[in-house]
Length: 503
Image (cartoon, rainbow, N blue to C red; front, side):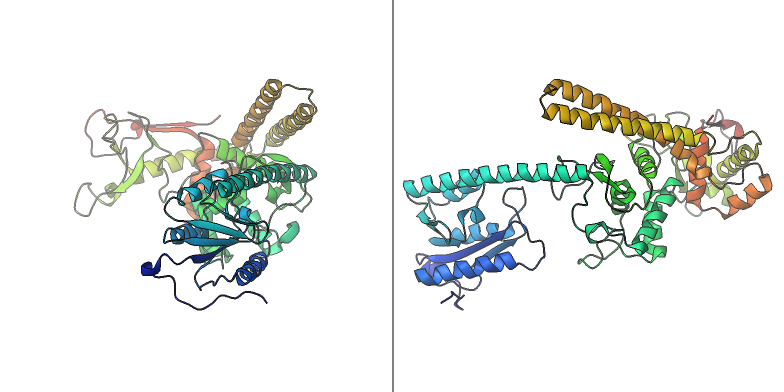
């Protein structure tokens, strides 16, 4: 006869001396989400309670599903169990003691409660023992030491297996945006990923792409239907763009634990994957190079043309846009919009510089159009293919060296210090090549621009969005400095502005 949960009230504080029966269930991995493993544990534990004549009240069964005790994950069911143990004498029923605790520290926390809260543990697999006795504690400590060893050993096996899968290029994990289970391409989502990459490589910021996804794309976010609002966030966009997956490549980083965020530029790429790519490996390298570039300008898209592009000639800080309040400051509509160096209390050199926003925008527009109209301006693609090929060749060779060194180190042909020194050198080579790609990437904003035709350029400038204009400016301008006024003036002084174009 199988055990059941009886419908009786929880133990009242006035009868705390009566032993309470608490059942704890945990399963480390629930691949289907159907809690089948937990249900089997519940049946076995309730059957044991029935054999021992232990009534279990509703609310006295605690469960943690798909939560490993080995990883540093919170176990809300376990925490509630400990709170109930503090209420009085308890008998805890589990399927196996490693379901209750798997690390020595957890056992010691439980033993600390014994001094004032008597506890006996009953397990379906392994029998029972009393933590109030020296023998019971000895048995518990021996079992948890074995369980901790097995968990660590299992983790090592899993890491080695995952590394082997990564080196083979096998798909790993659940479906991801753009792909279904096993890496099967989803055409509708793949088209959106392609558009995201094109927009980013053309100079649009993460915020601009996120806005497009939420307002125009018609594609719900990957977390839609999971209890969230289903909106896109810039962090999600960045994660997708940086992933090696979308270019059909396999990445692996054993240092990233489950649930932790990936490194800023994505996980290390090992080689080609066994699924269809959405963008090219070259494009993934260029995208990652943008994020790796320390002087990149791909933050929030400004609603103003020159915010953070124009800098203060006194302190070097980026200028920010502002508007005078109605009736205060300025001499007319053209003066109400301005760029200024924002004062910061901790930096006395900051602040005090202001320049007309409309006049500065107009000056820079005319200078950029004149630059683009120059017939001697090289095409954005001239020489880029060779540079990209060279950089990609360096990256491929450096990664191959890292793989060779890893095999040699595993075979004992290299010492730890030799392996470390060689790996650092190869990683530096990859970083240098990615920075080179980042410089090529800045010219992507000029693709399709009517270079050499001033009339067409003026028409295009009027049609471009602020994000497109800023992308062109970032590709062309090296420095844009606004110097302080030498004497007070109510008119715009073009000689204050120093504009330098990139070679």
